[in-house]
Each structure stands twice: as structure tokens, then as C-alpha cells.
Image 1 (cartoon, helix red, strand yellow):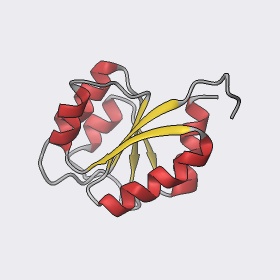
Image 2 (tube, helix red, strand yellow; image 1 turned 45 degrees about the horizontal axis):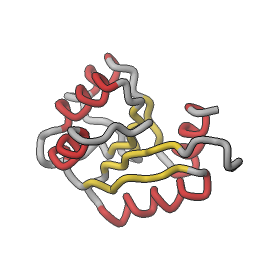
Image 3 (cartoon, one colour; image 1 turned 120 degrees about the vertical axis):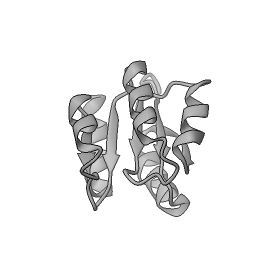
Image 4 (tube, helix red, strand yellow; image 1 turned 180 degrees about the vertical axis):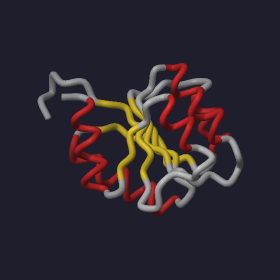
Length: 120
């Protein structure tokens, strides 16, 4: 990455810290500065009260129930969201995901390509 290019700020919200760190490691060589992984929707909402990332990568399974509020907050901030999961998105969240135009990735290479495409 050229020193003149701006580093992209990516928020990772992943319930499994190891999976989140693996994602961060996959993004690092491509010039992304990663915040997280944050392991709950509420932690992410609190974080978003102070910071705004360029993009957010979210696990579709957050057990604390803050998922719809989190998606709405990111949408209100104009932050592109990528749902990262091999399992997909629950039926109950599909209308919200489709309504605000969230992209879905299912592998690390797929995710990196989507993120690079957002900023090319």
C-alpha cells in the first residue's frame, strides 16, 4: 500500500474472539486498521458512541440481542456492513439485512475481496 493511501478503519464484531482475530490477521496485509474483535452487539454500540469505522464486519449470531439496534446504528452512520458467516443469516433478520443493503461473505478470501472492492 502506498504511504499516500488512507488506511481503512474496519470494525470486527465477532462473538468468537479467535475467529475475530483470524479475520483481523487476514485484513492486516491489505492495509486495514482493525478495531476489535468486539464480542457483543452492546459492546459494539458502546464503541460506536465514540468512533465511526469505514466499514464493519459482523457475525450474524450475537447472543445479546443487540443485533437489530447495531445494524440500524451502522446504517444511520453510513457505515457499509458485511455479514461474515458460513451459516447465513437467520430468517428473522433477513428483512432488515435486505432493507439496508448489507453484503454477505462466507470465507476470508471472499471477505477480503469484498472489502477491497468497497475501497477501490
